[in-house]
Length: 203
Image 1 (tube, rainbow, N blue to C red):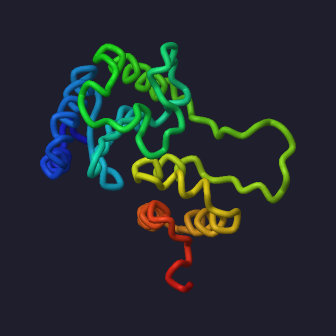
Image 2: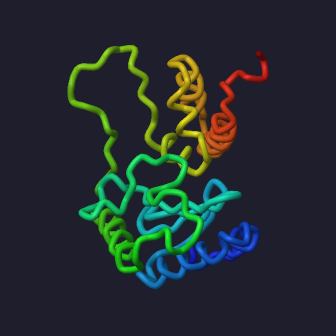
Protein backbone atom coordinates (compact mmCIF):
# COMPACT_ATOMS: atom_id res chain seq x y z
CA UNK A 1 0.00 0.00 0.00
CA UNK A 2 1.42 3.42 -0.96
CA UNK A 3 1.62 6.42 1.34
CA UNK A 4 -0.67 8.31 -1.03
CA UNK A 5 -3.46 6.80 -3.09
CA UNK A 6 -5.02 8.70 -6.00
CA UNK A 7 -8.37 7.12 -5.14
CA UNK A 8 -8.37 9.32 -2.05
CA UNK A 9 -7.81 12.34 -4.31
CA UNK A 10 -10.85 11.25 -6.31
CA UNK A 11 -12.89 10.87 -3.11
CA UNK A 12 -11.98 14.39 -1.95
CA UNK A 13 -12.66 15.90 -5.37
CA UNK A 14 -16.15 14.37 -5.40
CA UNK A 15 -16.96 15.52 -1.86
CA UNK A 16 -19.26 18.52 -1.24
CA UNK A 17 -17.46 21.87 -1.42
CA UNK A 18 -17.63 22.46 2.34
CA UNK A 19 -16.01 19.06 2.97
CA UNK A 20 -12.97 19.40 0.71
CA UNK A 21 -10.86 21.66 2.97
CA UNK A 22 -11.74 19.52 6.00
CA UNK A 23 -10.68 16.29 4.29
CA UNK A 24 -7.51 17.86 2.90
CA UNK A 25 -6.64 19.24 6.34
CA UNK A 26 -7.09 15.85 8.01
CA UNK A 27 -5.11 14.10 5.30
CA UNK A 28 -2.25 16.58 5.67
CA UNK A 29 -2.14 16.18 9.45
CA UNK A 30 -2.16 12.39 9.21
CA UNK A 31 0.78 12.21 6.80
CA UNK A 32 2.66 14.95 8.64
CA UNK A 33 2.37 12.88 11.81
CA UNK A 34 4.16 9.91 10.26
CA UNK A 35 5.42 8.94 6.79
CA UNK A 36 4.73 5.34 7.76
CA UNK A 37 0.98 5.86 7.45
CA UNK A 38 -0.48 4.69 4.17
CA UNK A 39 -3.87 5.43 2.72
CA UNK A 40 -6.45 3.55 0.72
CA UNK A 41 -10.17 3.38 0.08
CA UNK A 42 -12.12 0.73 2.01
CA UNK A 43 -15.88 0.39 1.85
CA UNK A 44 -15.98 3.62 -0.14
CA UNK A 45 -14.14 5.80 2.41
CA UNK A 46 -10.50 6.85 3.00
CA UNK A 47 -8.67 4.72 5.58
CA UNK A 48 -5.17 5.26 6.96
CA UNK A 49 -3.16 2.24 7.98
CA UNK A 50 -0.03 1.31 9.89
CA UNK A 51 0.16 -2.37 10.75
CA UNK A 52 -3.63 -2.30 10.69
CA UNK A 53 -6.24 0.43 10.52
CA UNK A 54 -5.36 3.61 12.41
CA UNK A 55 -8.11 6.03 11.43
CA UNK A 56 -10.67 6.83 8.76
CA UNK A 57 -12.59 9.82 7.45
CA UNK A 58 -15.78 10.34 5.50
CA UNK A 59 -17.86 13.02 3.83
CA UNK A 60 -21.62 13.23 3.60
CA UNK A 61 -24.12 15.78 2.32
CA UNK A 62 -23.99 17.98 5.39
CA UNK A 63 -21.06 16.85 7.51
CA UNK A 64 -17.72 15.06 7.60
CA UNK A 65 -16.63 12.35 10.02
CA UNK A 66 -13.27 11.32 11.43
CA UNK A 67 -12.55 8.47 13.80
CA UNK A 68 -10.10 5.92 15.12
CA UNK A 69 -10.44 2.16 14.70
CA UNK A 70 -9.45 1.51 18.31
CA UNK A 71 -10.88 4.70 19.80
CA UNK A 72 -11.97 3.03 23.06
CA UNK A 73 -8.34 2.06 23.78
CA UNK A 74 -6.90 5.55 23.33
CA UNK A 75 -5.92 7.73 26.26
CA UNK A 76 -8.50 10.51 26.23
CA UNK A 77 -7.84 12.72 29.30
CA UNK A 78 -9.54 15.85 27.97
CA UNK A 79 -12.56 14.00 26.57
CA UNK A 80 -11.86 15.18 23.02
CA UNK A 81 -12.82 11.77 21.68
CA UNK A 82 -16.49 10.87 21.53
CA UNK A 83 -16.85 7.12 21.98
CA UNK A 84 -19.88 5.48 20.45
CA UNK A 85 -21.27 8.32 18.32
CA UNK A 86 -22.01 6.01 15.42
CA UNK A 87 -23.15 8.52 12.83
CA UNK A 88 -20.19 10.86 13.09
CA UNK A 89 -16.97 9.10 14.00
CA UNK A 90 -15.23 10.26 17.19
CA UNK A 91 -15.50 14.04 16.86
CA UNK A 92 -19.16 14.64 16.17
CA UNK A 93 -20.53 16.02 12.91
CA UNK A 94 -17.75 18.09 11.39
CA UNK A 95 -18.89 20.96 9.18
CA UNK A 96 -15.78 23.14 9.40
CA UNK A 97 -12.13 22.73 10.42
CA UNK A 98 -12.80 24.58 13.67
CA UNK A 99 -15.04 21.71 14.79
CA UNK A 100 -11.92 19.57 15.20
CA UNK A 101 -9.56 19.56 18.20
CA UNK A 102 -6.19 21.28 17.88
CA UNK A 103 -3.67 19.79 15.48
CA UNK A 104 -1.43 18.64 18.35
CA UNK A 105 -4.30 16.75 19.95
CA UNK A 106 -5.18 14.97 16.71
CA UNK A 107 -1.55 14.03 16.15
CA UNK A 108 -1.34 12.69 19.68
CA UNK A 109 -4.29 10.38 19.03
CA UNK A 110 -2.76 9.26 15.73
CA UNK A 111 0.54 8.39 17.42
CA UNK A 112 -1.29 6.50 20.15
CA UNK A 113 -3.25 4.51 17.56
CA UNK A 114 -0.08 3.66 15.68
CA UNK A 115 1.59 2.49 18.91
CA UNK A 116 -1.39 0.25 19.66
CA UNK A 117 -1.04 -1.40 16.25
CA UNK A 118 2.70 -1.67 16.73
CA UNK A 119 2.15 -3.51 20.00
CA UNK A 120 -0.36 -5.83 18.40
CA UNK A 121 -2.94 -5.03 21.04
CA UNK A 122 -6.39 -6.03 19.90
CA UNK A 123 -9.59 -4.15 20.51
CA UNK A 124 -11.56 -6.48 22.74
CA UNK A 125 -15.26 -7.00 22.56
CA UNK A 126 -17.12 -4.95 25.15
CA UNK A 127 -18.67 -7.95 26.89
CA UNK A 128 -19.20 -7.95 30.63
CA UNK A 129 -17.68 -10.87 32.48
CA UNK A 130 -20.96 -11.97 34.00
CA UNK A 131 -23.39 -14.72 33.02
CA UNK A 132 -25.58 -13.60 30.16
CA UNK A 133 -28.81 -15.08 28.83
CA UNK A 134 -28.42 -17.44 25.90
CA UNK A 135 -30.80 -15.23 23.97
CA UNK A 136 -28.44 -12.23 24.10
CA UNK A 137 -27.43 -11.27 20.59
CA UNK A 138 -23.69 -10.77 20.08
CA UNK A 139 -23.14 -8.23 17.31
CA UNK A 140 -19.67 -8.40 15.69
CA UNK A 141 -17.64 -5.32 16.56
CA UNK A 142 -16.57 -4.84 12.93
CA UNK A 143 -20.25 -4.60 11.97
CA UNK A 144 -20.87 -1.86 14.55
CA UNK A 145 -17.77 0.02 13.40
CA UNK A 146 -18.83 -0.23 9.77
CA UNK A 147 -22.21 1.31 10.54
CA UNK A 148 -20.49 4.45 11.84
CA UNK A 149 -19.88 5.63 8.28
CA UNK A 150 -23.60 5.75 7.52
CA UNK A 151 -25.73 8.50 9.07
CA UNK A 152 -28.53 7.16 11.28
CA UNK A 153 -27.46 3.52 10.79
CA UNK A 154 -26.38 2.92 14.41
CA UNK A 155 -29.40 4.78 15.72
CA UNK A 156 -31.81 2.73 13.61
CA UNK A 157 -30.02 -0.52 14.44
CA UNK A 158 -30.39 0.18 18.17
CA UNK A 159 -34.12 0.73 17.64
CA UNK A 160 -34.59 -2.54 15.77
CA UNK A 161 -36.23 -5.47 17.49
CA UNK A 162 -34.15 -8.44 18.57
CA UNK A 163 -35.27 -10.48 15.55
CA UNK A 164 -34.52 -7.66 13.11
CA UNK A 165 -31.00 -7.30 14.48
CA UNK A 166 -30.50 -11.07 14.45
CA UNK A 167 -31.48 -11.34 10.79
CA UNK A 168 -28.78 -8.87 9.79
CA UNK A 169 -26.10 -10.34 12.07
CA UNK A 170 -26.69 -13.89 10.83
CA UNK A 171 -26.64 -12.71 7.21
CA UNK A 172 -23.24 -11.06 7.76
CA UNK A 173 -21.80 -14.05 9.64
CA UNK A 174 -22.97 -16.52 6.98
CA UNK A 175 -20.80 -14.88 4.29
CA UNK A 176 -18.26 -17.45 3.14
CA UNK A 177 -15.72 -15.04 1.64
CA UNK A 178 -14.34 -11.64 2.66
CA UNK A 179 -15.64 -10.11 -0.58
CA UNK A 180 -19.15 -11.39 0.11
CA UNK A 181 -19.01 -10.15 3.67
CA UNK A 182 -17.94 -6.66 2.62
CA UNK A 183 -20.71 -6.52 0.02
CA UNK A 184 -23.27 -7.55 2.64
CA UNK A 185 -21.88 -5.01 5.10
CA UNK A 186 -22.36 -2.24 2.53
CA UNK A 187 -25.88 -3.35 1.68
CA UNK A 188 -26.87 -3.84 5.32
CA UNK A 189 -25.56 -0.41 6.34
CA UNK A 190 -27.48 1.31 3.54
CA UNK A 191 -30.72 -0.48 4.37
CA UNK A 192 -30.37 0.05 8.12
CA UNK A 193 -29.64 3.77 7.61
CA UNK A 194 -32.97 3.91 5.77
CA UNK A 195 -34.73 2.05 8.59
CA UNK A 196 -35.30 -1.08 6.50
CA UNK A 197 -35.38 -4.59 7.93
CA UNK A 198 -33.35 -7.40 6.36
CA UNK A 199 -36.33 -8.75 4.41
CA UNK A 200 -38.03 -5.43 3.66
CA UNK A 201 -38.44 -6.34 -0.01
CA UNK A 202 -40.77 -9.19 0.86
CA UNK A 203 -43.05 -7.29 3.21
